[in-house]
Image (tube, rainbow, N blue to C red; front, top):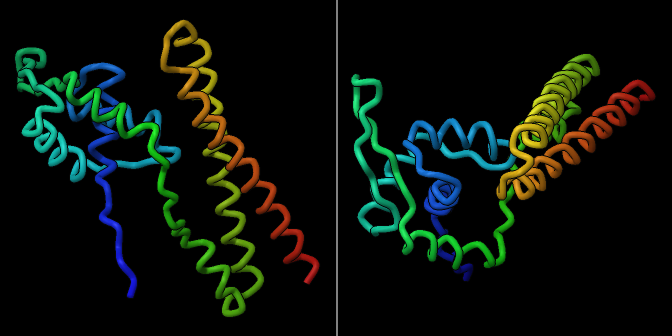
Length: 185
C-alpha cells in the first residue's frame, strides 16, 4: 500500500518570502514573481489571492487599504512577526524535488512517429526559446548587479539566476547534440 504524504502549500511560503522583501499588493507580488523567480517557480493569481486571504486569517500577514491615484483601492500586504517566524521555520527544511513535466521530452520519447524534419523543428524551437531565456536571465543578472549591488537580497537572488543560466546553457548544448545526432542518422 502506498501512503501519500500531505502536500505542503508552497504558495503560502512564496507569499511570505515576497513580503519579507517588502510590503506589496497582490498585483505587485504577481509582477515581482514574474520578474524574479519565474525561472524556477510560478504562482498564478488563482493561487495567490486565496492564499493571501488565508494568510490574513492565520495572522501571518496584515493588509492596509491603499488608494491608488485616487481611483481604486488596493490592499498592501505586510509580513507579521508570526509570518516571518513561519517562513524562517520552513526555509531550512529539506526541499521536495518535483517531477518534471516537459512536453517536448514526451514528444521526443515517441519520436519514431515523427519525420526527421518534424523532430528537427521541435528541437530548433526549443533551442530558440532557450536562447531567449538565456538572454532574459543575463539581462536580469546585469540589472541586479548594477541597480541593487548594495542591497541585502540580490546575492541570494543571483544564486537562483545562475542556476537558470547553467540550466539554459546545458539545454542549448543538449539541443546541439540532438540536432547533430539527427543529421548523422
